[in-house]
Image 1 (cartoon, chains in turn green, blue):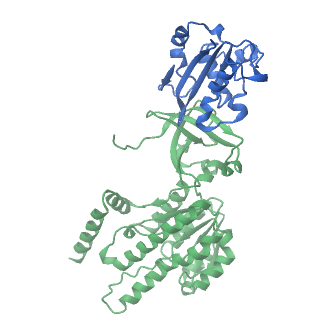
Image 2 (image 1 turned 45 degrees about the vertical axis):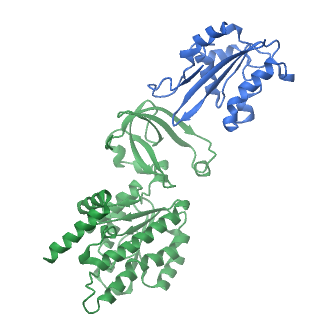
Length: 336
Length: 148
């Protein structure tokens, strides 16, 4: 049998509402709806039931989500256009919010408002109904127009943060850490260093300071105080999976960050905080910001936003060697 | 009798295989339902006991609630069921729980049930259910035991 995507359409044939549970997680969140769905494609599935689904028998659409423990579960949504798209007040459902990381009404820290993704992320999060967006800034761009624009926005607060400085990270962590629901680490340095040129090693070093050690500092300070928070998002790169030789030091720094992010995820899993790793290829910052919000809403762990990243990810899944060869060939073609 | 995967086409379980085999079971024993002095069901939940009472033919399908209302299940009642109190009283002791009904039936039939004896009990029906696989129990069984 080949794996094929199914619509998830089916009929809720039975439902129950838990008013008691032996599990501490559910006990704190009762009542909780569960049901049995006869899927149109054949099998019968046990699913969590969204609050907007009316009493059985009822047409529903079943979708996959990750629960707070990181396990894949099925959720029955109301049939129709509002179902899986999260339209109307779908995202407000108490049970669904326990499984996803929807930023609506949440407090979010974006680590670097000055990077290319800074302003688009702020816009996307405000549009998603975020309660507060804290935006990190470092001295270097304090006098820029971007700073002035961001500081004038409602629900946005600028906070000093330099991920290359342990004191700076420590101070903000002590001040904000426990209040943060979602941390988005978008601090990024793209040196594209040719290490053979003068200063190449220094530029590669600077890249690692932001892209890898920046995450390491954040994880050390914010990780422990954010246990029980909702999500931690890392903007990585598709080149974390296989090197783009023309951007070898950037690729290496992202590969290092990816490895660290996996460790962070393992460390955070027991607390229920989800670590989302975003692996963009070439993509417009606005589209990337939308993909981050969608990833949070869907509650997934890994996002490959944009056509290029999707294609390379598929290639990598078929064979890591195939992607390595393809990116090597792309670099040669560019050089030629 | 023992039967696995009796009604795979049912989208939700409301019966198991006893109804396919009960006639043969009683025919082999050479007795009828009215000869049964007491019943031991597998009672992980009350509804599972009712499913057995219906599927074994003590009443029609869906008539379980009326059957409960018109009988008493105590040791001196009109239809003694799970005379030890069953798993609903003692808990579910893993796989050992499957032997609870059998052990109790033997106690009753050998006169060693002490103060909880069913008077003049000669014939027992012991029923089992389990192998819970995702959304249903796949296996059911039943045996009729009689005192010499």
